[in-house]
Amino acid sequence: MVVKNTHERQRLIALDHQYVAPAGRVTKFDLVVDHAKNATVWDADGNKYIDFLASASAVNVGHGNPHVVQAIQEQAAKLVHYISGYFYHEPAIRLAQQLAELAPGQTPKKVSFSTSGSEAAEGIIKFARSYTKRPIILSFQNSWHGTTLGAASLSAIDPNMHKAIGPLVPDIYHLPYPDPQKRNAGESQEAFAQRYLASLQDLFAHDIPASEVAAILIEPIQGDAGIIMPPVTYMKGLYQLCRKNGILFCTDEINQGFGRSGKYWAIDHFDLEPDLMAVGKSLASGMPLSAVIGKAEIMDTLASPANATTTAANPICCAAALATLSEIEAQHLPERSLRLGKIAQALFLQLQHEFPVIRAVRMVGLNGGIDFGPKQADLVAALSNYCFEHGLIVISTMDHILRFQPPLVITEEELHHGIQIIRSGLQKLV
Ligand SMILES: Cc1ncc(COP(=O)(O)O)c(C=O)c1O
Image 1 (cartoon, rainbow, N blue to C red):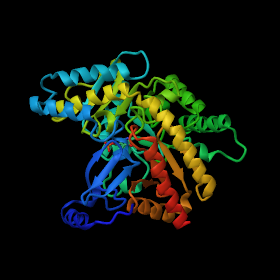
Image 2: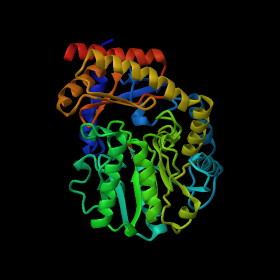
Image 3: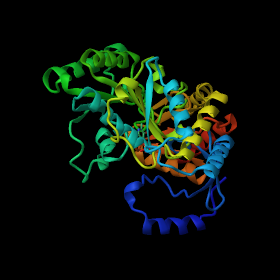
């Protein structure tokens, strides 16, 4: 299929350029989304696409999931909104309980709601500083934690997220992320992990006093950096360093949570219990809802109203989240992600065999980075455009990596079909 009809698309995009500020965009190609179902998207001209992006990992349970839609409709008919900071409503209370119980580990948890992932990441700064009474937060290079001022300060993936908006939130520093591709020749995973841990200890010894560090915030699997997973030894070592120095161990599950990586939480790959974690995106199937979930003892230290906003825990969003959580469970989506991820991995490895221009295939669940290497940014842009013109939504990240994050309900047939479109693109472009 070649996308043909583009009239309505062009009209709407011209209007957008006239009225919408560019700062909120990361435009990849000119798709005007009209409606979507499961893993299929239709544009404003009626063209149909297989979705390998899931709205940036925000609809793990699939577009238009009937249970989520029904929950939204029923809740909208009952109560659209009442500020949850002042009073109480059942959907928020039930959801808080479920999230507290779903979070890894046995320590009792509490939840603080917000609307975007950025606010949840930023919330971690506030809870961690308030509990530890220390100022410094360490996050990682190539991380994406969001674009509100605090979250932008935590992020370190694109200088445009910092440019011209400073001064940023002070006392935030970025550590090198233990990306296994950065192993020296002949270096074992173990030696690599120890080298990165030693450099952090060096930092504590000569530069940043560990006793002033409130938290280390890490994506257990980096999403926007191209699905990068650190060695288990590194994560365990980092956790131990945190414990030893009274530093909170905090994770960002906004991109990788809710089954995306083949486990419920990305941190489950490392069998660790975070002190604080940030969730969003697929929590409410893309409805604006996010949360900090943390150990109750920590969550209780931030005084009211330091993390209250008018629309946090909107009842429709909470109802959407409750339905989403029950769909993840009913459809065994983490297991499905693992199973289909293995199938997709085999297909991408076959593609790599056919086209050695693919430098690496990284896959953790239905969650992949197809890495062409930094010199191939033009090819990846052309390939992504080719796919768009042939009915597949697959975008680049870091300019040279194809980001593969379909809804977890995608069918095997759609997977095969989508990857076949990528193959045809490579046949044409390489
Ligand atoms: C890991 C991670 N954290 C935080 C965010 C920010 O979430 P939001 O865009 O909802 O503010 C993102 C968004 O892409 C993300 O991938």
